[in-house]
Amino acid sequence: MERTIPLLSAVPYLRAYHGQTFVVKLGGELLADPASLARVARDVAVLHRLRVGVVVVHGGGPQLDAMTARLGLDIRRIAGRRVTSPEVLEAAKMVFRGTLSIDLVSAIAKAGERAVGLSGADGGLITASRRPPTTVTDDDGSTQDVDYGEVGDVVSVDGSVPRAVLKSGAIPVVCALGADGQGAVYNVNADTMAAEIAIAVGAAKLVLLTRAPGVLADADDPESLLHWADLRELGRLEADGAFSGGMRPKIAAVRRALEGGVPRVHVIDGRRDGALLEEVFTTEGCGTLVVPEADQAPAEPIV
Image 1 (cartoon, rainbow, N blue to C red):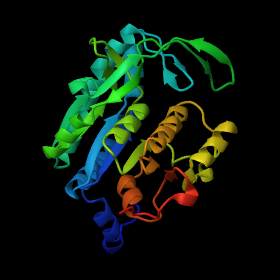
Image 2 (cartoon, rainbow, N blue to C red):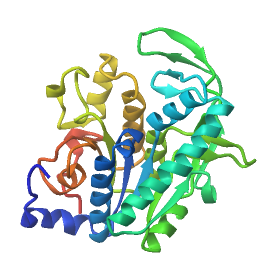
Image 3 (cartoon, rainbow, N blue to C red):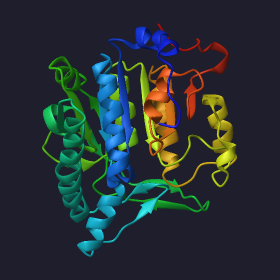
Image 4 (cartoon, helix red, strand yellow):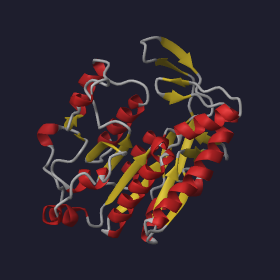
């Protein structure tokens, strides 16, 4: 860890968040790196030992890209979201619910805690409907009609499923698949799913672990990191075209979580050693904290 978190300064945060629930989302790029995976699993395990309920949601974009390439399938994204053919969906089931879920559950076990691998389709956790064809503005400003294929939009979340796992003393690990009431399975954006789960379980925090330092005012300048932002600031940056590619669904998830009642969303660099603990248990943090309205946001920690 780049710097030690003083125990005494962390006490107010430990007191405030004891018994609370956090939703932590990590992408496939962190799962692909054994060192990053081990560090994130360690930090999640530490939160769990401190009696913070942690629901982990994971994607797997790079791994799915690799699998689809091996199978000779097209890789296509529009506005940061994947177009999913039936064949790509089958690959997603294998990669998300198979390899990646097991790897993450095993890493948490190695860190000393129990975890249960789930998909959004398990136990009716995520009810989704097939996304209808829609008109999308891509990163280059072009507008086109898009059929995203076997992609699902979240209709509802049954928060009792992750709560039951937490009550059992284990950590729920959820991959980005959902299902409708007729048994059809869909690929669901993991950032979107994490936001919806955070709302459903009444999470105190949603933490998005990314490859960026946090929310950048200029995507090409790491020094433009925003340490604090609210929905108004995000709207201004969106209007200025600051977000592109995979950051667009992340910002949409941040907005959805905050508007849905989650009081704090954090966007941090998941590759940084100890980033999750540093962001949660220090005043300075290490990424971007986003709140609904800066003028009305109570100070951390929220009791």
